Image (cartoon, rainbow, N blue to C red):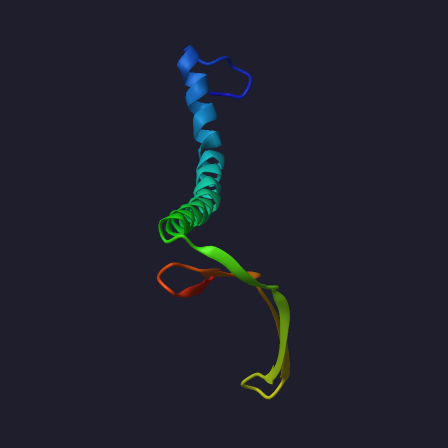
Length: 103
């Protein structure tokens, strides 16, 4: 069908639009899954930890601040390499089972 003609039926025009939008919809779905699954995992782990704290009567007993870690080395060809990493803050939890958990 040439560009300037009207579609033969109202649904024909929508079909073309959907075919053109399909890659965009696929990318949007992939992005939603790529972001949503890790967030859901973090929320689930947090919820499980809070249940554990309540069940085992845990109390905060300490805290370590995160840090920036830098290391220097050599790659396989002898060139110097500098890498930088970050460590998270940690909180110590003393529980009724006598164990101190760092999270």
